[in-house]
Amino acid sequence: MLLQVNDLNISYKEVRAVHGVSFSIEEGELVSIIGANGAGKTSILNALIGLVPCGRQSSIFFSGKDITSLPSHERARKGIRIVPERARVFPRLTVYENLLTGIYGLRAKVDLKERLEWLYGFFPVLEERREQYSHTLSGGEQQQLAIARALISEPKVLLVDEISMGLMPLLVEKVFEILGDLNRKFGITILIVEQNALASLRISNRAYVLEAGRIVMKGNASMLIQDKRIREAYLGI
Ligand SMILES: Nc1ncnc2c1ncn2[C@@H]1O[C@H](COP(=O)(O)OP(=O)(O)OP(=O)(O)O)[C@@H](O)[C@H]1O
Ligand SMILES: [Mg+2]
Image (tube, rainbow, N blue to C red; front, top):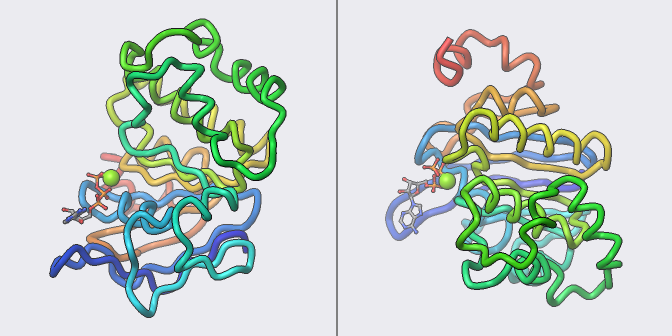
């Protein structure tokens, strides 16, 4: 297992947001956690990158090593990278400067020129807008920049928080197609958390359904997409 999460509990003061959530991801998989507003999706990703603490009995293993108490920057160095909710890029930096922040502090050196060429192949608009300030990019372009910034470091696992938010349907399709390609053609392991169940299930191998901080269903994405409860609750069918 590349990532193994056991009995994850997350509380904010007296409010318990995530209750005993366990899941795992194998190398090369694309896995989704689908859930509605407030289900606990962002909390789970923030616990994975070390931004929020988890309960005492919770544990997180990455590549077989216990990382539960490692600080965020150490986890990033191990190859855990996030595309944050609302694609928070640095607004006062240019597109190019934002991309560079993705490799800042890395121990292993990446071949920057080769890496940028690879990324610009996926996201041609980022090459066109290289010198543009990031706050002047459209929402969809900022999403692409956030993905590219996470990818520039050659992550071992890419965590993607609600990438569909605020994008028009055509762009949602494009961004998910890119995530699917990154997984299938380049073997990048991806964990997506999403409200857009259909778009994420379509490209996933497996998925977990999160409701009010608990996993209530799990299975192959192709199976979940057919499930009557999922279709009614998340696909509006
Ligand atoms: N810093 C915080 N302080 C207090 N409560 C919080 C905090 N962050 C999240 N919560 C609560 O934890 C619960 C889960 O929030 P979380 O952001 O993880 O949900 P989500 O599934 O990402 O939702 P969304 O789809 O709206 O982004 C919510 O009830 C939220 O109000
Ligand atoms: Mg969220």
